[in-house]
Length: 260
Ligand SMILES: NC(=O)c1ccc[n+]([C@@H]2O[C@H](COP(=O)([O-])OP(=O)(O)OC[C@H]3O[C@@H](n4cnc5c(N)ncnc54)[C@H](OP(=O)(O)O)[C@@H]3O)[C@@H](O)[C@H]2O)c1
Image (cartoon, rainbow, N blue to C red; front, side, top):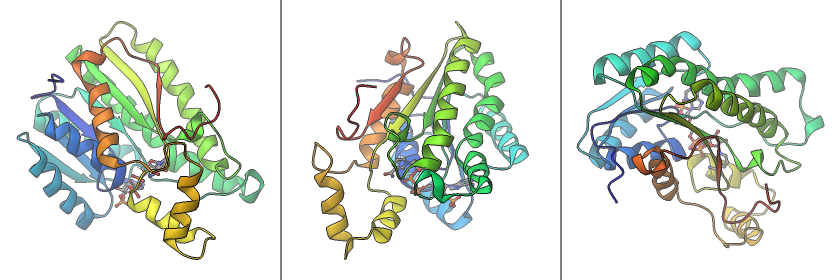
């Protein structure tokens, strides 16, 4: 299926690894020009090469700390200036520590909001003038299944990301009939570098046992693949998803128990 993304300009935040990188590669494969950002320049350079190899479009990479509003705005402006427009904006961030609600200080809650919620808001707001000017746009926010099922150990994640859901819903109305849609992607466990670190910290005696224990709880009996996640995002970014806005797409192998 042609998603109509050839020549579109896409921006993917926190894209030197894992889910963000999977999405950036998928958009490049669909023919989009892709601008990526993350902090570590070495990892970003390797990601740049991977995204470049995935498709025919141009690739830009910019070292950005997404907690720095001015740096985010400068990245968005650089993207629009060098690639000529902006159409697809994928907001993303680093994760937060796991633990129950009473395990963290107010300062850690503040850090979670600054690290895992506000980068989405900053990136989306900086991109809005360009999306409105284009008269066509897609905003996709990578969050977590915690927005549908806040488990006991996801206090920081759920606090940061449920706030983001409120912002996303507000944006849908603020954007109205502008041609710009806003959707939230809610990943369950996916085999990314962050997930590998999570496995290492698991109380099971080794990573293999930890993985078995985790997948035993997931109805599909496996964890997700960042490439598949990228393909889902590319579909929502595509032409055919023009009537889909304000939704949460959960990709979790059936792990969420509620009907949400
Ligand atoms: N993988 C899963 O199973 C899973 C499940 C649910 C939710 N999530 C969420 O999905 C998001 C992505 O997870 P992932 O598994 O893809 O993680 P990952 O493989 O660790 O990738 C995280 C990316 O974010 C970048 N990043 C982190 N902090 C940043 C900052 N302050 N400024 C700019 N870039 C930053 C990292 O690069 P630098 O460190 O170089 O900046 C890296 O490119 C996270 O919020 C995570 O909590 C993941």
